[in-house]
Image (cartoon, rainbow, N blue to C red; front, side, top):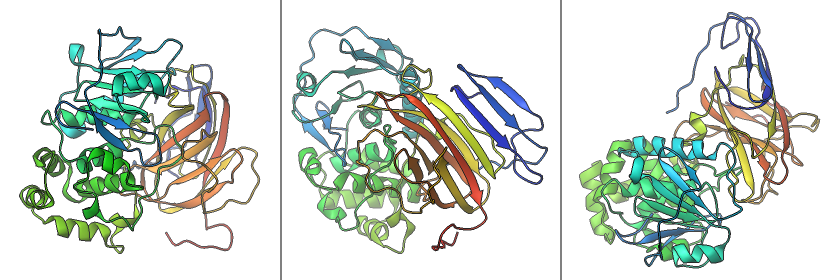
Length: 442
């Protein structure tokens, strides 16, 4: 195992627990070490399972809903020289802007994973995505032609943003390549939200149950952007379709819906591509007894393909220096940076996540004072399976967390503000029972 992070981790295995190896292993990493103490117990791994018309741009803001709107052709000018070059993307950065050490690797990996998921060739050579990273919204207007946005994507080849990275726009670049065009904004934005990941944020916004799908299907980009709460809903509905019918059928549907399709035409596309009516799909999605109505879908293409941490299934501690200059730190986004890992949960149980030195009682309810875009010194855990539940977080100034987790691969992210680099240290353990007075059945 190789984990490219300055981290000291101690995992103690006990007889009969799940462990990652037979011997004590010590591996050097960037500036520190990993210590893993293992017994000969067996190990069981869990499984894990826009956009515009042909010529237009997609514009996105960083509000909770991540809206996108369609705008006119951008002003392009001469071909800019890249500040950073990767296998699948080049970044043209304004003077004074610097990516964190792991961002180019993250963008390359994300584009590669997204290309495989959507069945297109990952761009290489002269076909690489050109990502223009600008210093402020006024400069962004020169590229996106529409004010009050944080990013835009043009076709399959170009994006521009005040943030780096911004996976939402990269998904637009990739999905455009399915048929060199885009369907209705409902579907383009749905795909982008479903696959964009966390963008260094502590959490994702929940979809509201009181938004009617039929009210969103025929909206333009600007109308969808102006509809409060629409983006989490379209992302979750796209995730529902993928989980319910599979990615291949979703791609078939996506490629057949026209940019100006009516509800009647979309219904026919559902019959042809999925074998069900649009109304049947909406009813199943909005049925509150159906698990799809109450879970976030996210492919977590970056987060769930991060380096794996072995542990004994009972307890581990981790301490890491998070700094933008590190070779595995992703950011700076808009003031946030993250380092990503994965680990496996082996049995359904209660688990606790606690920052080192925090002696407060662990709580089941996440801290509610956090703002969506607020940079946090924190730890976040999220399951990798489609339509999964079990998100947990703990952060500086917050409370320790406990919840029920089920077997499978999980994303583990260490977060910090770019302007406050430092140590993130925490412990994670399985609990014999739920703490406190509230008992949650697994």
